[in-house]
Image: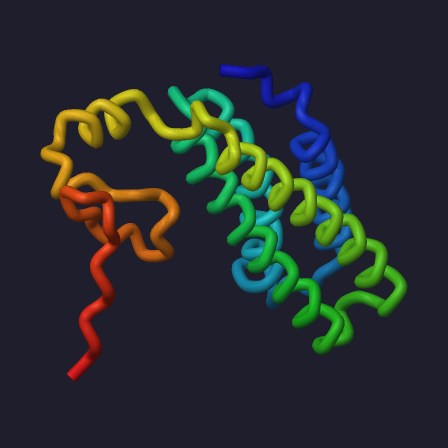
Length: 162
């Protein structure tokens, strides 16, 4: 477990969330439960999923929450575009927020990649399950779709769709 407040990606997401809240104050009352609320929830979701992932047991769980944060980032990106389309924000404002959001998404991608490369990225239970399974049922991480490995170590071909 690590302190999420020390992560640069969380700090950037926190700043972006504050900017989204400040921006959406000026949204019309008709958007109170629409785009305004959605944008705020998506921005908060980025921060909170990074924080929650840090409090989980292993890298696999942390990675799962980072994936959710990435999804929320994509949602916020769409909502910023819609806000511009609806003339709720100016192009320079959209560009500034979009640049900050894209940087956050890049940091998330980098952090996710580091967790995938890490030899300790698999949880202890999944490693133990893998080791306890008969060799013929074990799965290899290198196979693109995690196909079973035969007793001689070969990966059987995929069955063609009929």
